[in-house]
Length: 359
Image (cartoon, rainbow, N blue to C red):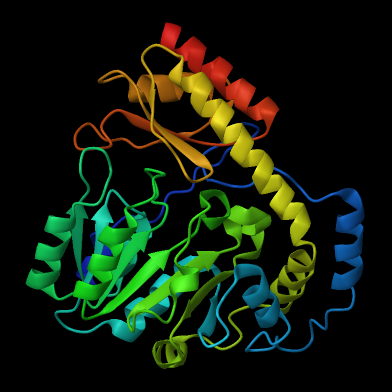
């Protein structure tokens, strides 16, 4: 009898690759859209004192009753809307696949987009329909509406702003998609802290609209805390597939503490927005570099045809890790992506990029 994994692992799982996370070693890490700033020393000490009191012998609160009101207040979630928490937004995407999945069901998203929409659809046995963006990375509304009519997707993801392109989609086009969809439309606002725009105040206007967010980009990537806000009838059903105790006690206590000190993170994101503007200006001044406008904490940029991997490797050799989009064709052809870091990190990246271009 064949006892190999190939005999038993589902073909759609065998067909995909695991999500790659490179080891940065001692490199300056500008590849994962993280907040580069740590907490002030006094705040760290207060947090550590708080953690001493967390009862690790007990299961965590399954509904995070202390944390939820703080999230509602900080995120501006309307009082009449439901709230569901996940172990990062990745788990929420997985919950949505489990709750809305089924034979012949389809997940849809513009492309290029967040890779986990496609990956989770694949290993959940769902069809995936990626609708190409226009050359300027804007939504192709006509193509999206045609795909909705053809596939009647159970879930549509609209990242706002989009990853990896960094741009905000046209709000009227998004409204048209929400209205045309029979299934659920998820506006993914992972980078809301840097965007200045949001659909969260519009929850309740559409029966099928939910907004997904994460605290990772704000500066709490290590906590793995995401949230889904929207009409309670939707969230009550999705909550049935949530694993019990999915938000551990240390994450709940840490997130509650952080949100009580939200001014610290607001100041950090303000600084990063200023650094983003300066980094864009400096990159635009370099010959052979085309940076794209960004409403997130990263910048996508294009280099000369066929040079992306060489430039990526040169920058890496100089101790700075960015993201190689590894596309030789399509809208991401010859593109790289850099996270906005501290002034010192941004200077190191610009120096490495300049040297790589000269090489």
